[in-house]
Amino acid sequence: MSEVITIGEPLTTFASSEPDVSLVDVEKWHKIMGGAELNVAIGVKRLGHSVEYISRVGNDPFGKYVIKTISEHEVGTTYISEDDQYFTGYQLKQLVTKGDPATFNFRRNSAASHLEPGVIDQVDLSDVKFAHMSGIFPAISDTSEASFRKLYKRLNDADIPVTFDPNLRPTLWKSHDYMVKTINELAGYADIVLPGIEEGKLLMGSDDPEAVADFYLQGERTKTVIVKLGPAGAFVKTKTGENYTVDGFHVDQVVDTVGAGDGFALGVITALLEGKSLKSAVLRGNAVGALQVQTVGDNDGYPDPNGLLAFYAKEGVAEDE
Image (cartoon, rainbow, N blue to C red; front, side, top):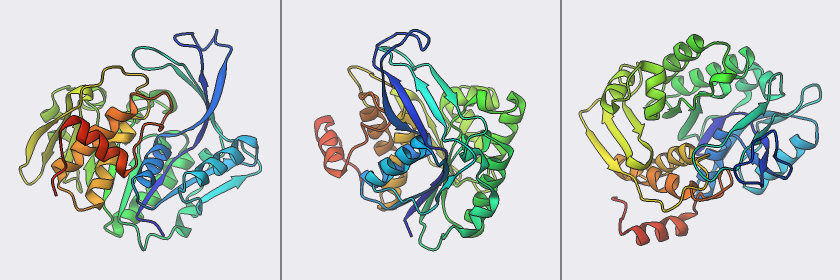
């Protein structure tokens, strides 16, 4: 088995090739693979750690493309099943020169939304050292939420450390109130919670980083909250009394913000797997996020170990042991 495990829905993404043209008017597209949890898995593997990804795709060209591409990234596919009845989810994504791109999802009743809880019983957790969970998969259907919760319980019962990223997708949830209630409950089962500062506003009503951290530190398992502040870096607070901000990195041009938060998560996870300090883990999260926003693809900016070291050297910083 692998050091890291995650669960999510992979998406075949049709990304616009025409800058700042609306999704209605664009005529030229290129095909890439997307999915927040999958981005994390790809980045974890790129930094030298084994990772397994749990999902379901349709028995269709998109599904076969997804499995082929995941395998090329050397992410484990043991727990990706094919479905003859339901289709692989896909997405349209706008190319923008400033700000966040518009997206449109075709994923209602997709194969991943029919990943039933019984599949989770077959997952081998014996060698897993870290799990990454996100608020997207439980949003896509009642079935996926049940499977997500079952995996979460197995991870908690095995005392495997979990990171949780709210990754809010309001259009996927049955209602705003249900989203807020469910996300805040699920966050409490994680050892490390990774909310963005804007997510804090939606989920608990404040954009004060310490207030957001204090809210999530009430979780029954939560030991650490890392509030992502965008270009300003990240604010950290722990139950043991640590309280500090790790500055972000200056980026001359932001090409695409998609994948930056996932990059932050994988930076934290891989550094902690390597025995680095929490502060170093947050520094790495900031670094991977900064690299990612300078690329067009959802995960093209994630570095390998040499690329990470080169970035640190250019920035004049180093990770602590």
